[in-house]
Image (tube, rainbow, N blue to C red; front, side, top):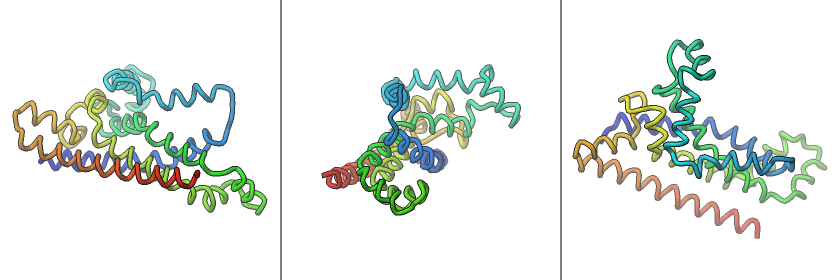
Length: 222
């Protein structure tokens, strides 16, 4: 078991979830409540990481983060190090490719809140922030938790984009998914089997939690 790769993956997943939590809530709520021209294009862009092959998406991220890109040059000027093949670049890539896993469940959860409930909160004199904190978030929490679980599990298991953007630098960008691949390449089936079983267990728990919470949301809609 490559414990260094495991802890790096857990750290990556936790930071990804912490960054996506406020972003997902604000964006999901905005998409749930607002109707505007071009909304379908915005929703399609949010869902794009779901349909693009990881190598294609990883290639575009690699180009966007590279030393020749404005973002890469700005990061190098600010920090003195490149963005690609670093943990910071891997974290940014992780946040981007997990956007649909975070936003879509949150959006559906906010859409399930009846408009009358929001109107009643406004009639009680609540500000939009108070209504969000005291009314909407307690009702939308199953979708929010589902989004966080999916984002965390997806981060642990992602391979193609991690390899493209981060490579396989021990202690820096070598995640548990990359470690499994390396163990298979080295014909170390025992270590690969242990790490694969761990990811399988995490994925199974994540899916079970997702189905349970989705059922709760469905019953609330009913």
